[in-house]
Length: 227
Image (cartoon, rainbow, N blue to C red; front, side, top):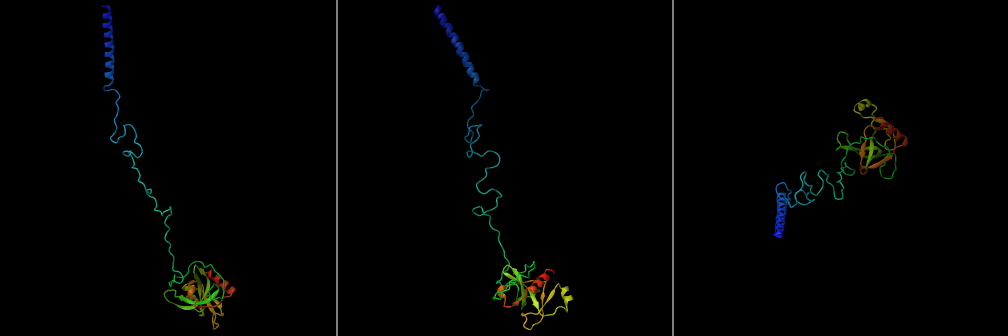
């Protein structure tokens, strides 16, 4: 009897302990306990940032597409920018007169009677009229320098402008008396016009006339600088 009583007490105690443990386990699985999150619609567990390149892009600016950056200038292969188009005015031999020279003349004196026109020589060539470049006349000029492929020249005349100097000056024309020389077969005195510099195509020179003396040439260039 005593043995059965102890067994009954031990059995009751064990049931009480098991009942207490079972109640604690049930209360831990209700409302306030931690829950396990399932995967998101994109396949990534909640609370974990997606890896670059997988799933939907993160919020904010869209991922830039491959190619040239926005606003970048167009370049040729190799990173070279296209060269700007270059334009050139009429060149000697084109048959078009580009107009009188209006810059500062860099005087050059290098006469050589070798069949080619050179600065310091008096030659015969076609000279366009000042008011209409499509028309002109053949006349002597003194070559005084160069402008690229063009020769620069000033006109000669045997007309005496001392009689109408005031009228010529009113129109802006300035003349200098240089005396006579071998360029005029009749030995007449000549004048050069200082205020107009003509472009001459070397291929259009008809013939060489003579060489201008160095001292006279220097005087002409000096007076041209005063105009």
